[in-house]
Amino acid sequence: MSILIKNVLHQNQYVDVLIEGNRFSQIAPHIEQTAEKIIDGSNKAIVPAFYNTHCHAAMSILRGYGDDKPLFNWLKEDIWPIEAKLTSADIYVASRLAILEMIKSGTIFFADMYFYGEETMRAVKELGIRAAISLVEMDMFESEQTQMKKAATAKFLEMENPCPERIIKGLSCHAVYTVSSDLFEFAAKTAQENDLFMQIHLSETAGENTDCLAKYGMSPTERLDSFDILNDKTILAHAVHLNSKDVEIIRRRGSYLSHNPVSNLKLNSGLFAFEDLYQEMPDKITIGTDGASSNNNLSMVESIKFASMSAKMQANSAVAGKAADVYRTATLNGARAFGLEAGEIREGALADCLLIDMENPFMVPNYNIISNLVYAADSSAICDVICDGKLVMENHKVEGEKEIIAEARKLAKKIINLK
Ligand SMILES: [Zn+2]
Image (cartoon, rainbow, N blue to C red; front, side, top):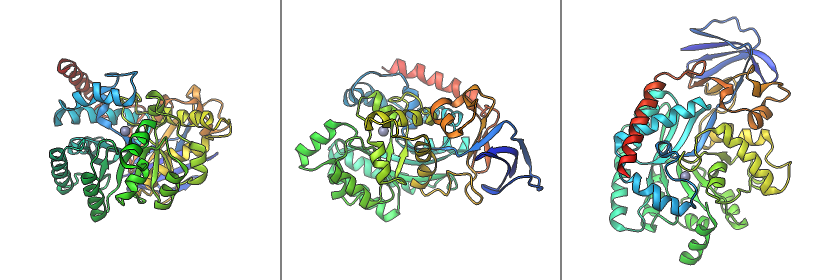
């Protein structure tokens, strides 16, 4: 497959962009070569797509199911009881809803931490985007659960990857307050032996830190480090409450942080120290949405605005959380965190990109496109989405979207009756 985008705005100039196979092969004014698909890029701009580094995709079906509670009450009273009743077929339907929403808002990669990963992989394969899929390790310190989780993980990792060109299989540990030492040790060993990416919720709330300190005499970061689990393939989600020693450990280990600004604000978890951490580790800060039950959407367009706004408030400075810095964390840094040669419009890079409708009122005037995307636009400005050299949304339409919505509505009715 080849795509030629004619006369499209790219970094303040009009160029043609040729995609051959799954890479950008040429970016230049007036490319003579033709292609199987020609897109008229006039009145459009080409920009990197979004890489969502922390998500629980299937939780989209629980959007609005339980709101306005602190993290632990929300998990215990609303989320965990209903999650225990979801079937693998439900996860497939819910994952499709999530991926539809992601494509519509310009996200072509998500790092997932959930159950029934095989069903989410099936949905990712069909809808054409990328993902890092992991089963969540969480045993609540019960040895029977530990054994079940170990067996499920081994089975998941043995299972053939249905789409290795776009799906990465990995591991995830829920958090220090839900995972036993035995399970952390298993996860660390399994990740090392198989060279896997690992996601972990870290220091999301102040209470998590206080409890960890009381129970183990160390911070959550120190506890993770004691299992030798932190390295440059670890992605630490939230990381709201880090002290200078924690930051030093994370920096030394080369781990990535996934900042989840909307979820942190909605659950009142706290303000991520974006500016200080970005200054210290500019390549290591990435953006995630978290699940749509604590956000309540998966829009990275919205998340980057929140990331910037909350950075300014946290640092008490209008200079903090600059649009260009935040945009980079949500694109290039997110791709790099998962080893993808993507996240930028560059010859040779993986052909993932968005075409922005420059006639959309949010994009007018256009003194600075990144400023418009971070501060002004919503996802209505995104008209086309290309992932791995293929159009996954063309002129705002995603193939099969009506059925995806209908199936999700049917599942939501079932969920209400399970309550
Ligand atoms: Zn999460």
